[in-house]
Image 1: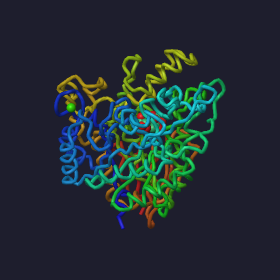
Image 2: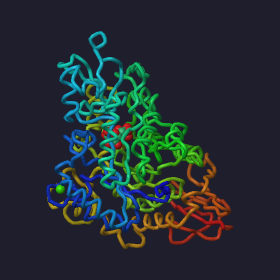
Image 3: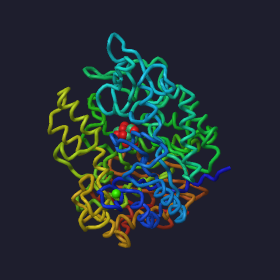
Image 4: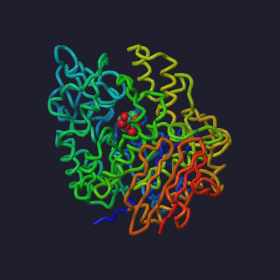
Length: 557
Ligand code: TEU
Ligand code: CA
């Protein structure tokens, strides 16, 4: 029986191409990551989640895999991977791989053969459909703009791709496909990998008959997430995966589940479900969705604190005792939290970064720290389309501005600057030397110019830095059953300035108070009766006074 070590763990997410270049080709790589393991260890993280490093044409930065059992050349060799894994284990760090099996690359051998004809051994490894009245089989739109269907003349059929045309969806109805996936999972687990983050795993079971999706008025396509998320056979597939693979290893699994509800998540992560350990839910990072559904996530309006509190509290309360939460503000698909939920001005950036870190890390669940978050890194505040490299952003601009003409250039550029995934993909800011110490060559993607002032060298071993504050947050969790296992009590859900909650465990209580504004205000939660202040982002404590972006945690014994 495996210990539930993942409940006490903190995960550090590494986007390998942007973390550390070791051979001066401008691209991060595995030897570079190996060199930086002591930094991750020093932060206090227990686990590394590594974004995809498999062979790929890189149309979606590695989320289009052409060979699951070999390393992408630019990242290094399999020997480099083996050395990374051994070094991580030697330093007490576990390593999660990114399992992308909703789809492969169109360059994968399986697809290259599948597309040739309707009767080859791989013909049914993907989702092929005949044209309907000479058109696509249904109204599904891709997450990356355009239709979710592309026509293959050799078969006179369309194939489904929820993402780019270079990312054909696997047919999970086909038992051969499922066995291929289980086999490649065992390949990595038998090497000693400590688990998987599973890419859009709640999209793998498509609804019978592939019916049309809900379509907003005047929208070009139907909402594919509404049609596909949490499909009819998902639990059966996850139970089979657990029974045939996961349950044979002492590992950790986290499923990326865009669109899932707490009820769905309990079915996937329930302690007796024997499926996954936890999920990445999207409710709190989807609050900035545009009122015009045709614009999806693209918006530049601030998130209302009351809505943010409601989303996080719902997941805390509904999974408590039934399942397990992941806790995140950032990842490679989200803008930088201090810009989105805090205040990235020079005056308030560090205070609000510490406040956001406290608010998240004192919740119940496994916290994830995305590279640079521990430094208080910010969005880039892009101003031109040619500054972007992410296909999701560029495709969205072209469809919404150029094709549909439903938003103008300046507005869309404002939306992109606020929400684009590229904000999170700039090279890691190690120091203030050329290229931030990331590479001696021109980096594959432009650095955030503020690396000269926001970088690890300026923060590590500096007691007042965001990095040192994150070290303390992580150390607190490692030493506290109350933080790990305590129940959650929301306070004042309608308070538009303060996020406050309590955690209770075996007669002790933690009180967490965070001021999300640049105002000095007062709030009385009987903190004067506390045993002591556990952590705070101001040197002193003024009791019921909350200064701009002040956060503080009290222990009641
Ligand atoms: O992301 C899936 C996904 O949900 C994102 O595309 C998200 O919907 C969008 O960015 C809005 O936040 C996973 C990977 O994390 C992402 O990097 C890949 O591009 C995508 O799947 C396809 O594999
Ligand atoms: Ca390199």
